[in-house]
Length: 191
Ligand SMILES: [Zn+2]
Image 1 (cartoon, protein in one colour):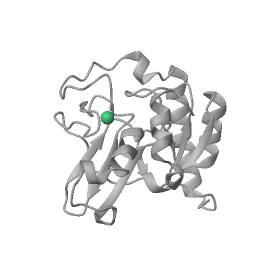
Image 2 (cartoon, helix red, strand yellow):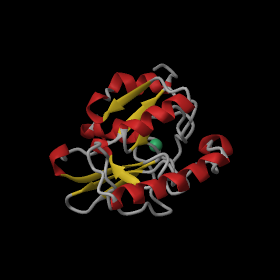
Image 3 (cartoon, rainbow, N blue to C red):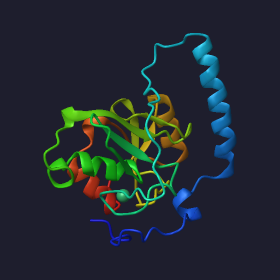
Image 4 (cartoon, rainbow, N blue to C red):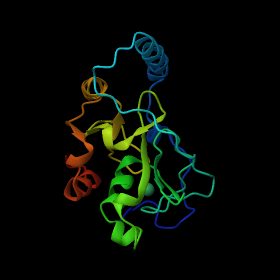
């Protein structure tokens, strides 16, 4: 259970702490985007990458089903599940996205993982949503999301490792390695 936002609609304003991205990262993002374009042009595709996914954006009234916070104020953390019937569910971070997926019985009675059309998490550096199932998640870093300790998503292992060095991350995880116990540990600052 989230502790800071039990009341739907009680989303606190975006704080510097929550965003916590020093200005040099902005320029790094621009550099990375340029590199990505360059790499695509050269058809360098050997390295596994989580590809960008096209998903609806959260509206101003869309709240995270796990913690109740509005999602739109946190564009750099948004995660989305798009169901086959068109229903889109948005989260204010990968952690709550995983909590939802791991307890569909509670959050989506009657629905199953096989009915999901697409899932995206926001790439930390590129800031677009990428395929959640193929992303690389860093835990234990000094970068906090709206709900505290997070799984910080990256589209490649190389970027995840670089982020880990820059932000004192502890581990890189793939989608299938995330467990409920791990998510509870994150809430308590244990990695
Ligand atoms: Zn949430």
